[in-house]
Length: 311
Ligand SMILES: Nc1nc2c(ncn2[C@@H]2O[C@H](COP(=O)(O)OP(=O)(O)OP(=O)(O)O)[C@@H](O)[C@H]2O)c(=O)[nH]1
Ligand SMILES: [Mg+2]
Ligand SMILES: [Zn+2]
Image (tube, rainbow, N blue to C red; front, side, top):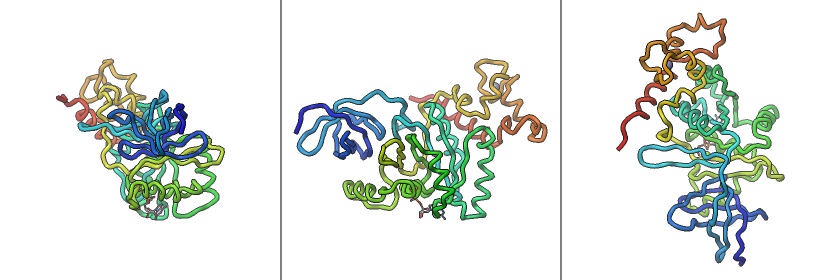
């Protein structure tokens, strides 16, 4: 037992405890000092060994922190991310509002999102879902198609090129295939998942804790599995900043007459003007400049939600 501070990386979090990977590659449970556990997956920390476990002594500064926030609490997903792979599927049918919220939260933290649509084998629902995602492609997001049930060289290559050398959080609703993706890319993922569910005494199929996986032995590429989310609160975001986190809105904002335009009712609003012009008229101008009705609905209801007076 040593009383020296050691470096560690948080690789899993459950409640107030975290699993820390040491420089030597060992994994130990660490407990927070004091009441609040502020360490999340992806955090670099300094820890101190106790009997067979450890205590968290210091958090290193973060590059970013991806989180959601509702009226009651703040829920952190992970820290120090390079990108977020938003995984949705043909089934269960995804919510465009939840997708937009995840994209806005990523933009607010300057983390690049990629949208992946899984289960292309479910032909009918897949075609419908793919169509719903076209506006997101048009506003500049990378959109990829997956069928994680099968393993093809082409798909392995695609995933490799998307993930290599980066730390990627895999995010999405329950049942989209996040854990399936991790298992397809990480050689011994199932083993580690079992270790963790043993430590937690659970053993359910659905993911209950956020977990870090190294993809390669050199430890240059990492994937983070996360539990499926239902609600994505954006209470930490200022309603007046929303449009700047929505690329389809952002391009029109410079045309607004008032600098503090809400894009809800103002005269001379660039966003509202863009809404009035039909897709046909925009054809020559590029699809990028279209705001879909659904996105405008999402914006206005989010705006109302975030501008409510909170006590
Ligand atoms: N048809 C089809 N099923 C798939 C595909 N990929 C994954 N699945 C299935 O979808 C189900 C859910 O997959 P998971 O990987 O557990 O989903 P998850 O996103 O980790 O779900 P949570 O842990 O609950 O958040 C499993 O039964 C998978 O076998 C696919 O490409 N096509
Ligand atoms: Mg899972
Ligand atoms: Zn405006």
